[in-house]
Length: 359
Image 1 (cartoon, helix red, strand yellow):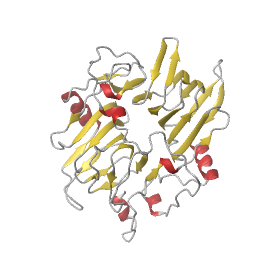
Image 2 (image 1 turned 90 degrees about the vertical axis):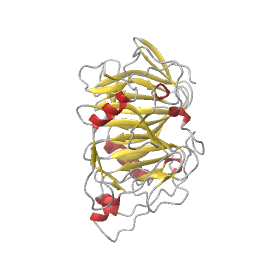
Image 3 (image 1 turned 30 degrees about the vertical axis):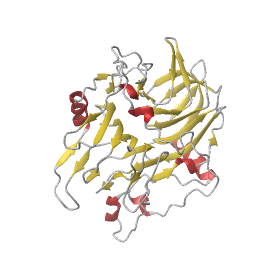
Image 4 (image 1 turned 45 degrees about the horizontal axis):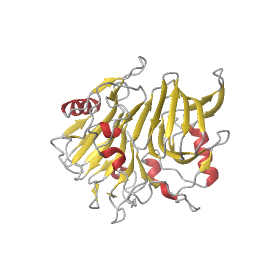
């Protein structure tokens, strides 16, 4: 998808998905030392330590004392989890999004049903013993080695890596529970009961966050879930029914298609459907990104830096969109962003507790 990669090689003819992978075609790989957990590796950076996964927890599996050394976010795609600590238990069902600041320890996650999650780890994860000793450490190097051993070529981390031909996984894949389904309803519907208190420091019911629209892009709706005032990272849900103006990614971004089909340059006419995950490396360019089906195009998005907009290749920049603009857009559209309850984290999180009835 990286128009900007042409600067490295003008004769390069991309297929439209240099940074994409159909997660339904990947296998589940068991994680050594963690019973009941398997994963699909998507990306692993050896520079930053960041990695992205689809994780599956078998029914009855428990993760105890999970420490996010550098922070992480997650989205429940299917199944059900119970999160428990000394304040009580929360049921995490499809459409619940969560953010853990660095050095946050989740006391216990229990799979009530077989559960699949999208997870972005900003660095290593540690599983601790009851006396706070490290029982198991999971790093980007571990994920990379798992992928290499299984014959999986993960998505490239840079524009330069996009120039290298990437062979697709040739083994037998295991479709996600949401495969073949439009799953935008997990995050798209809006709850009838407006939350009146921020009930939990970790999790947000995406349905409780209203859609907001930039007047300059009336066919694109956003649910702003998190804005970091320190790094400029933004976490969103996107309803993309128009054509995005030409733009460049100053920082990288990643997203997972939940509903509809995403059409990209040189990609297949039918586009890329639910379960396709993309990583846009820093410097990637889009001259036209749009839906290619009658359904709403809905996807998750993490944006790791500003976007610059223009009117076409070689034209001057007409707008720069940074985290400050997302804060203003959210507040103008009725999304109240509140400071994280952890004093060592500068994130603003959507005010939207779990557990409200859906419309």
